Length: 238
View 1 (cartoon, rainbow, N blue to C red):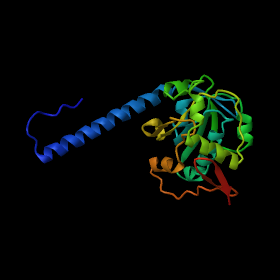
View 2: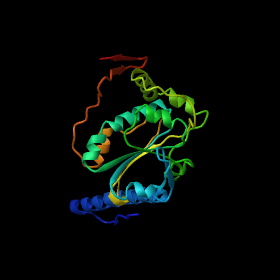
View 3: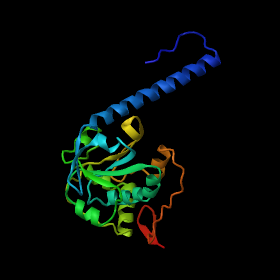
View 4: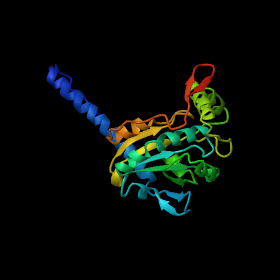
């Protein structure tokens, strides 16, 4: 903890102290985040397609990577988020960045793959160890209902219906995830987003920004309808 000397300060000294304090706090936060990532490095994942077992650290050994941790493969919110991130897959590929999705269970993964919601590589964290180590939020039976009633959740539900992503209520309904952007070799965490609500997903533009990539994003995919929402309902058009 930085202690400010108890004497009359000049404006220059005050500014210097503020800068040192700012970067000191920023460094502490970075170290905490890196410590979190080091906790998951040796965790094991199963490939959703090949069933091969890998260590998490292998995901960023050769390339920078965007890792999104889904709630459930049958979750409509997650399917929307998967489509959003997939919209920047070609940009990530062009910049040698890998796109990765991780789920808590195999249940629903086949439908998720067949529905072509996500264009990255898919893995399963069967023990949910990464979710625990990263401190991802977990709702309870009583808290999940009001969480579904928030405007953010309602908007996402209506949008999921408008885009016909489908979904079901099978599997673990209470776990939420987040998104990590990690540099090549795991030397730096560029983005660390933890979901606070069921439909709280990072926007693709924030992912690109964290990677220092400047690119225009077409938020509307071919054939997608525009969804306008208010407090009562949503209307699809286009």
